[in-house]
Image 1 (cartoon, rainbow, N blue to C red):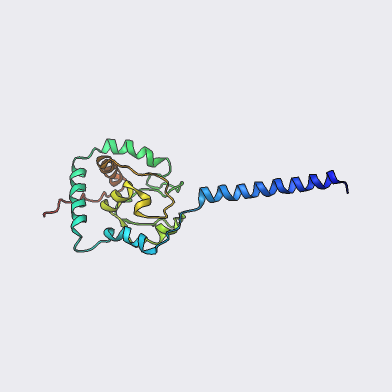
Image 2: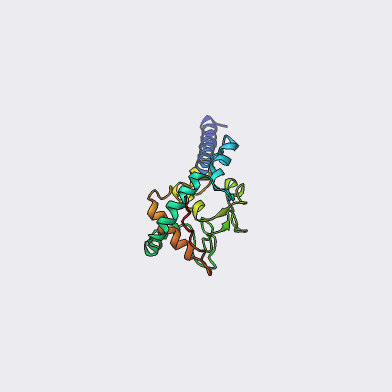
Length: 186
């Protein structure tokens, strides 16, 4: 065998090895979810979201602010904001899975509820919790902060009233919309 033939074979093998490593690197970059180093960090992030009979003072304050924002909300603006969600989620009654699960009847539905959707491990680990107005508000503010390890790449909606408007619209994606939360007394 000539040296040029051997060199050609080695170059082709090295080229395909580089391509293979590039594919592996890119797939890890795109599809790999960050691992939660401290299992307690995820639990602590969700501790205020538990449905207790006696919610903490900070949760009561959040609910008061949320109920006020919902009363002032604009469902038409919420429908416009849903356009951001509609890129990955369906809002139709019999909506199919897209990048994200369908959002029909989301309010008071358990986390990771859709059976044929591939949820992240972080979301499946919280399947015993429910999407009420408070949890949806917190999640929509900063999804990765509320549930570290979620695969949802949406950065969140920082404006409190915009989130309330979107929640009003999400509430209407149901045959029987959930009642709005009542203001709590201090």
